[in-house]
Length: 148
Image (cartoon, rainbow, N blue to C red; front, side, top):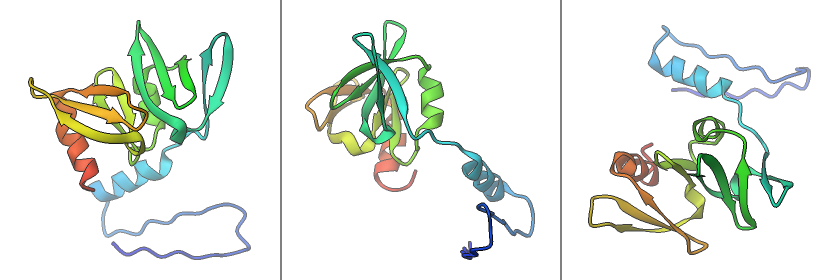
């Protein structure tokens, strides 16, 4: 793939041009990536107060009693969105699914430990831990090895 960047001060807004011999999977993936909208801020409730935080402040997200909770260094915040909705809005380069009920910020991870039943236990820099189900182990390995 060849990438060119042109800076033109006369342009009012960003313009992207993709040139290809044919429409293929690579072009489709590029289009999807370019059209993704990432939120700059999230909000959650703690003690009847709505708090605002950036995606990079999230250590992990998990479900508890049918409610999604965002864990940050500052506390736990109940979110109004569903886990799959938040996953779509988080950068896949920095966030990874741990299980059906948890998503982690890769930058917040400290270490992994193999569990007796084929799962992994992941430890966060703040000392908390979460379990990775077998279904998501290979995805995490790929991301950590730069393949995903």
